[in-house]
Image: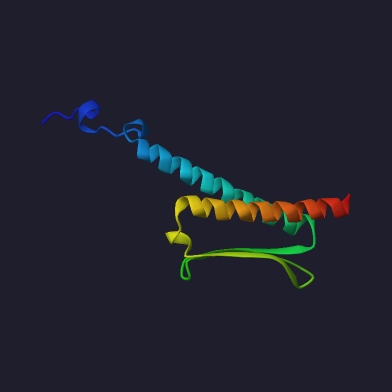
Length: 113
């Protein structure tokens, strides 16, 4: 039996499946929002005396962000049923988290100016 890789091992490209392209875009958007959340929390931790906590709990199926200052909770947001959320709704919730954290960052920058 002859082995011809060009015909025997065809790997489908994303162009063959438009749904795959849409799913890839949704994943990239979510990863971008997660990166923004993590970056903002890290910036707040390093650049201020705020304490940050980001937690993805697979057991409880939650994703949460909490920011405290001098023991006082300034910002807290938890997404329950994280893995079961509608993709568009989840993107909206993550975008809201980014907006809240950006607001805190702007406050820190104004106080230090």
